[in-house]
Image (cartoon, rainbow, N blue to C red; front, side, top):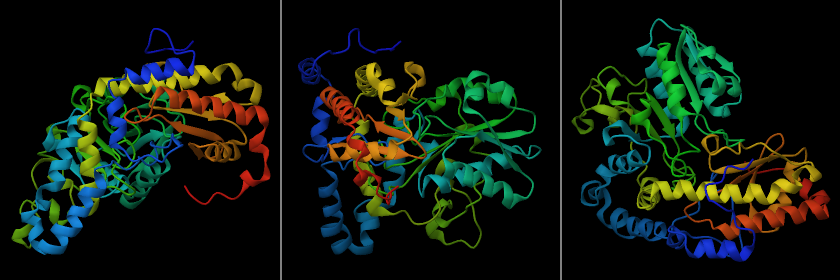
Length: 423
């Protein structure tokens, strides 16, 4: 059964166009640079460039860096840029501005917060995660556990955690680290429920919001979350390799100590004191000098998303994915495709994933048709529906083109079996 956010799903392309004309988010599409004749369903991998980004970076190059030189740190406000971007992200994840820091990569921030969590639970030795968690999350946790020599990484199935989180936890669990939305299937955990279950067993929780922030409502304060990380280049549209963010709940500010103590995480970085004193609140999670040009691009993306209604974004995300699923369900089995994304709204992020043994060539054929999605090994075709710039007609056309490719067997052409070179 399809759980629709609308009373009736559109049954024609004309009906989709009518929905797009009445869409309260319709104007947001013009704020992005999108290639003509392309339906971009890979914004959950790399978001498109906001139209304002080019001018903002040009200003930084032509006036701030080239003319003001080092004076731009104060004259152009570079010194306050990271906290300002952090405050914008805080508003998207249900956090206070002093609970968020923008710095480094998701992986580095994960290391910092896992290190903090282990120190806050000194008598416990287990980092718990899910078997299919995003690989870098597992790598970082495994590496930290091996480095301390006192901890271990333990994994349980996602389904077990979702069904009964208390059954996976024990009195040795120091921290549970999970992805809110699964990067392959798009399945979404109940963040508040799992956090509460972990706390009941005395464990802390670290959430990876990489596939949530900017598309799925998140309220970390309401859920009483401890820590979170996320990236800036997916739904936040900050550009390739954009700085990531880290969340440190206020109740841990006095006790937390980051294992990476760089000078921008110092209470007075320009005092050049010989000894380290952590900055207040989440500011200690900063480390080295902020990457200003990347931060400026991220600032544009964050401001764009912050100016849109979060409830409208979620409603449209569900409407788009409902529509695509409804158009595909009748013929998936006929062509050996399997829907792996949950149909229940409460369990679905902002993507639709299909399983097929030849998902890679199918993905390449779809891209050739003008629908850009991506592939996740070994057999997942992943299609992201970013509600800020996608339309109902895009979901309709993407489903029609995929059906045409499967029906005609276009994906079986040898040219689509070329070696994959881009992740």
